[in-house]
Image (cartoon, rainbow, N blue to C red; front, side, top):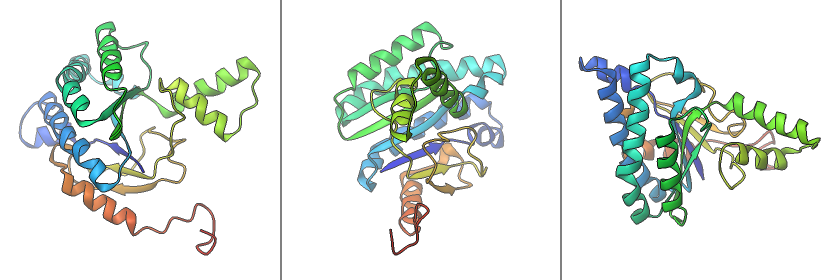
Amino acid sequence: MHVAIIMDGNGRWARARRRPREWGHRQGAKAIRAIVESAPDVGIDVLTLYAFSADNWKRPDAEVRGLLRLFRRYLRAETPSMVEDGVRLQVIGRRDRLPADLVRAIRTSEEATRHGSRITLRLAVDYSARDAMVRVARVAAESGTVVDEASFAELMGQILNTDDAVPDVDLLIRSGGEQRLSDFLLWECAYAELYFTSRMWPDFRPEDLREAMRVFAARDRRFGMVAEAV
């Protein structure tokens, strides 16, 4: 079971409380731990969180710097808990545009948690699904390789800095009230069920995750076939 979440609404949540956007991002980061801890209990094996998109570089410099600092602090603070809780961390996306100290922190956390077997937590940082697919196509073209779906998925895993082929997403959740994919896991979401909630991410709790899973369980997934064939 692979669930992906677009953690949206931090800035609007903070503005509604007359606080700066960075404060909203900090509160949003705090919400992650409870979701990760509860995810295995509702049957989730892989959890992918959209932490920083490639388009987020367009935000004001101060906000971008704050987000990168927050991510670095999150890794350093949460890695011991992830090791204890059996969480395997993978950070997907580009790393060539990230600060060197952040890249080191990512590698340290990934190495420390590599034996985690309870859940795989994937954080998408400087991530763009379109960019990833273009890079896969470029690698295939330069090597003269003719790819099928399986080999494309394997190349996608390599492009995204993971050792494994990228698993398909079963359920995509977006908080914050918006209803779009925002260039997130386009390949992996080919047959994903979509669940949108108006709950802002800092207010998103394990009970909200359980509700999304309840709705998902009631969906009729046919994968292009008729129900009888499924």
